[in-house]
Length: 260
Image (tube, rainbow, N blue to C red; front, side, top):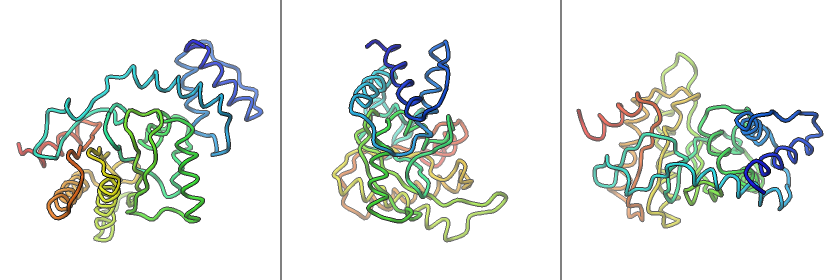
């Protein structure tokens, strides 16, 4: 199958599985958005090996078409700490960190622009299936400040580390417990990366999106926690990347890491 045939196959499979009467769009851009939406809303049910084979080829080709970035390509760094602005699904590292919710199954809102949705959409159906196995075995929601590791499937990274940050009510400020919980997110991710002998990890800006944690305070906690961990613990980690997307986050981290 060529790319267009793969896309049609994946769409028809997911539509038929839902017993929906959805007409396929005419152009590939709309088809691709429909595929992502159907993946987003799909519950973690079993799926055929044929679907996964076609999906993996399709998503891997998409990944390889991106401008992938390894640690050797990142030019802003101070020792082990690195700063990079861009799409976290372009990073070819040992692990990227996903800011998850307490169900740990990914975002179910079609085409939502949160990092949880972006990572699951680029990784593929298997990521939600693996997360569901973890949650079934745990038999309760994920605690704030803890972390779980999975394969990354069709992402260029080897693993995804999922952590649940604290959520701050609108028009409120984080209290001491919120700050401790956010620091615990970073520490838990570093611990699990070190346990698995990983050499590179890329952090997103945990809790600063829909969870409303103030960006500058979150960055101070992130950098302080990482520095403390690396200074006082033996770790396999050689590169810790702070991945930012927006210009405001970039300027905050650049100032805190490297000064004016």
